[in-house]
Length: 90
Picture 1 (cartoon, helix red, strand yellow):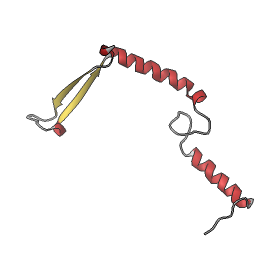
Picture 2 (cartoon, one colour; picture 1 turned 180 degrees about the vertical axis):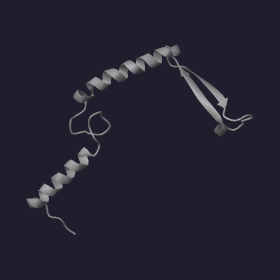
Picture 3 (cartoon, helix red, strand yellow; picture 1 turned 135 degrees about the vertical axis):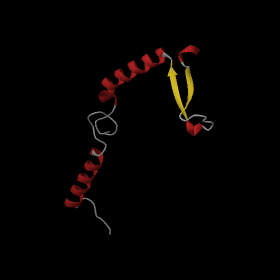
Picture 4 (cartoon, one colour; picture 1 turned 90 degrees about the vertical axis):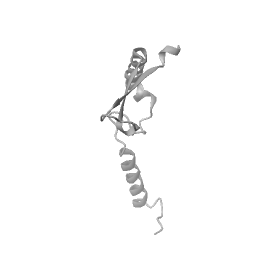
């Protein structure tokens, strides 16, 4: 199990004679098994997200927009004000 979660990190200089970290480029090489497991989990969860997350939650899900919740809240407030369900103090 220890071999499933390892990576090689290589520091390559961006400029010749680089000695500070800001002048070095990092390259990570993850274990192939780790990558395969990550891809399988990602693909599987993408198909099941609609069933796992309620329709009222709209952010960060493919096909849903984060501003849908804001628009729904504005419409609800407008409706409440029009029907005098809520008094607004200015």
